[in-house]
Each structure stands twice: as C-alpha cells, then as structure tokens.
Image (cartoon, rainbow, N blue to C red; front, side, top):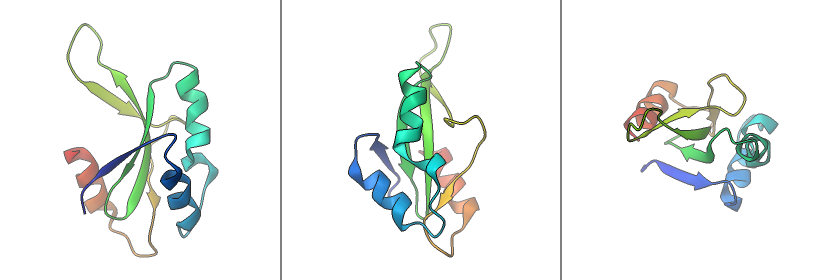
Length: 97
C-alpha cells in the first residue's frame, strides 16, 4: 500500500471515516477545516495501510525548508480503518511519508 495524502475536499476522506470500525467526528475533514481556517496549517488526511491520520502541515520557522505536522485537536492519534490493524506499521509509514 502506498501512503496517500487526501485533500480536505476529497470525498474519500469522509468515506474512509464512515467505513472505519469506530467512526469518530474528530477524524473528519470538516472538523480539521476549522483549524485550517484559523491559520493553523494546511489540512491533509494521510492514509496508510490501515489507518487515517488527519494532520495540519505547517511551514518550519526561520526560513528552514520543510514542514512539520500536528493534529487538528492537539493530541496525536490515528483512526484504524480495519478491525485488525498494525499501529506500528502505520506510524512507520507515516514517518516515511
């Protein structure tokens, strides 16, 4: 599985949350858009082999090239997309992305 970044307007993002074993409002793009609108970063949903990570990408300070990523709600987390998932694999895929 290739890691994929979803834009906030991509309908597949809501479809992934709907199909998750435990859908959660905090993982929906609509929730993250409020943070994006407040200037907290550019919202993306990163899909790994069996999880979804909603993230805000922010430019690094002091003229350094690159980005950091934070969750819209201030604590890390992933939404498992399958009843059986391997969080360590998903986190490794996110890091590699």
